[in-house]
Amino acid sequence: MAIGQSCTKRPYCKHIKSCHEALYYLEVCGYGGLDRDNDGIPCEAICGQKMTAGLRAMKAKVRAKTKGTSALGLISQPQTNNFSCAGKKKCSDLKSCDEAKFQLKNCGQKHLDGDRDGTPCNRLCR
Image (cartoon, rainbow, N blue to C red; front, side, top):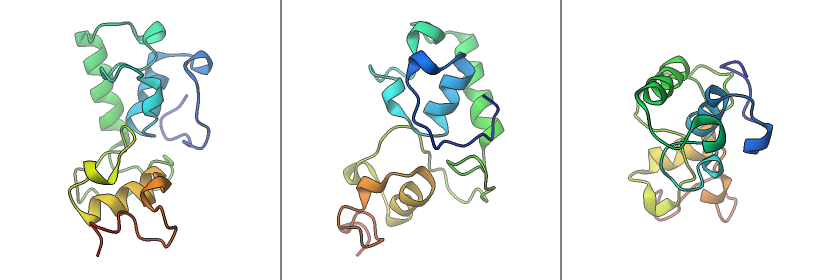
């Protein structure tokens, strides 16, 4: 998987070929299902079960290469915030309307707009 490739398909660990690819899907696409035990390590059969220095470095490299890239990995975005697409978010996890809008627009977190009116987290975005 090349950095910058689309996040349109939700993969399973059995379809992922490398730890780098698994980290991309976790960190950039926000597919938290790849890290079932929430320890920051996706697809442990591929990446290992311990957060090694090498894995931390690879994770930092994925983040650095994709900084300023939307969740689709196609559109460059100016970095005016520190929001991340990693993991599935709930409205109660978010701190601002801007963050909720970022999650909806850039990360595909459509569940944040339960009434489908285009405004995520109605309590945050009054």
